[in-house]
Image (cartoon, rainbow, N blue to C red; front, top):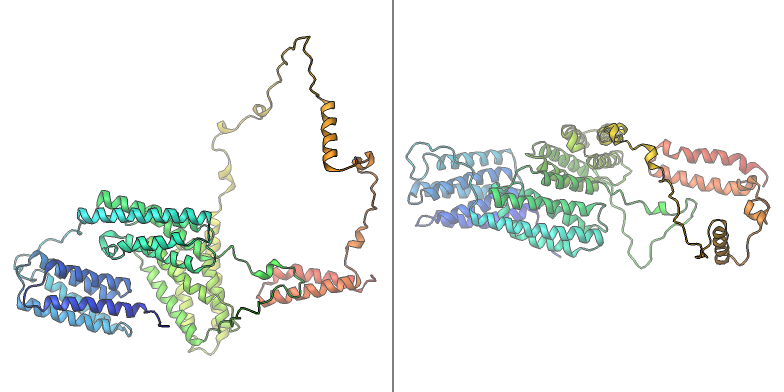
Length: 555
């Protein structure tokens, strides 16, 4: 079985092919084809953006600007321009080779490459000896591209709407989700155009959500609303592209989709431990089947894994802080959820256990909408946790790091409590806005009975009414429910066939109380194993203390 390519490996392959084609174009004996030159520069920039290589993407944007300038002055391509362009391609190759071991020197080299290409594409660019032109307006999409994006976006929105209705009716169905992925392939390359933002972010969010749904045993509650919100967001984008040529960067439909996406997948509130479905004193509530293999518990996190989690938390905090829009911020938070789930596993190590508590607190905070209310505080808590985890290797006092990490988790819980309190509707808002809306209670009384129409004297009414109707109905019920009618005393609740049970016999005594005390003791041990708080086990302790004198009493 072969290992799948990582993001860096895939980017290296894709960028290598693109640079080979660019080298053929710029080093040929004839001037390069302008449209092909511009297209390959855009492909290189889009590949770098997808792989998260921001410095290379910025330099590729400068190469794209050079290609756009050359397209405007295509007859002028001299040997000096050819040599500088070929040298820039070689610089790109060196940067791509260093993707795995990227450092500050590589970032500076990418910046110098971008500035060199900017100067080449400026007033002293190919054949341009005139004065500096005014800044170019953002590129407008032509009518064909607009029609294509609008049509394909509408088709994806229709597939999402069908998937939402299918998930609502049959949550285990997966084929509509696969259909959504197939429909998205047509826009994956074209959506990288900057003029179509936030379409690339929305498509990334949909792809991540569908990937999670196909891996989960059961979808989270409300996932049909998430898919429906995605359909509405793409419908809005398609309409804006068709009418205005570009989508609105921060549309309400797109913000609603990303917010629902984070809240739906943050916490699995409908999942409960299987032990809670059995009686507390059951000695063997469940057992593993012999025919299936038993998987070993995951290994506890070591110092290397803890430092890696700290680095990832710090990087995620910086990315969330630098997000250009609420849509981009929510999608970066959604990617962070995968790391928080993997860190939430219980562990005997004090730092790893504190990390699990912090991860659960962060998930609960995201589910409560803390990012919308106070994103700066959330970023600060993530950065603090990352710094503490990065110091695990250098510190000798792991308990101190554990306590500080728990303090960060406690402050995250405070942010979540504030967000939840803001979501509470004041009871005063439930009252009527005006006194005119109050309905007088007299109007709720039944209308006065009108006089019954007079019946002719010669017509007889054989239908029972009043007391006679009541007794006939009671007799029919008795015949349907029991073979014999109850006695009058039984109906009055007086004499019963069985004597009442003394309430004292319902209490545990002697051996029965001892057995119940033993079951309560086992339950307390289980709760302590889960690191339960004293407040949660207080009822069990009180019951155990009450059972002690009952166990000493005579049965």
